[in-house]
Length: 310
Image (cartoon, rainbow, N blue to C red; front, side):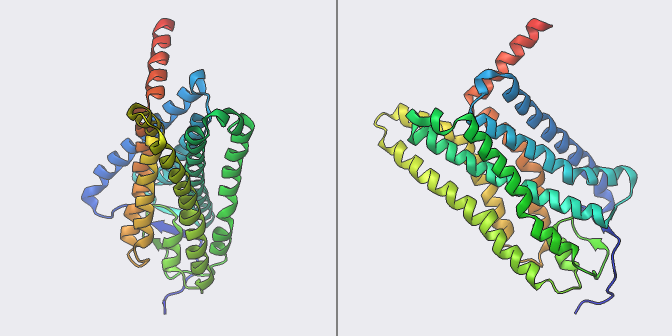
């Protein structure tokens, strides 16, 4: 039974660490990561928009993923940086609800986009002759729109039920942002329904459905690759989906570990959440840039044209 029940109008976000000696290094590290996320994803987004050779379904979805990475990092990391600069680590109740909604929506959207990209790789490798018909611009636009709309809708029940919590045992949130799990840990009201919804919907929407669809796509991809007789052909086919596969493995490994950890170990969940918020958005543009010849070639073309203009 939780004591000292209080109706909350604002929260105190404890942040990444409360050790005074670590504040300056953490600020520098978070600022550096934030700038890398913005620069890396913005560069990749501009490259896709400006280079006509990258106007393909795969890079269209990759541009959407870059937008998600930049926005989700901004939603969470900006408060950490503001806290270090101003010293104010309080967040009003409504702002916390908005941040929780945006972070949940963008996290879901990132998973949906990666799932859509796995379908795009399936069509490219398993049905190459019909690729332009199946993955037409209209279909790509519909798929991307569905990811955005569903991403913003699926988190509404969580935030609505979170707003119905009448009191909390503390105003201190042991997290670096307004995370749903952190609020549930300090809630005084009955959150049985919210906990059940978190487990059921979280498993279905965030793990089982995207993972299952991605897994099925790669089963067909692997079967098709194995049927290719030449070693060069197999390597080329696998290379086209290696970047996406790397991102998928990285993201799902973190999500599974985060989900498998018991709720009371919030410190561990905070670290995994920080990894997803910072490191994954940093690695995404690097993985797609370093492992993709089209992106590297397009980058060289842009640099060459920029030199001519200068």
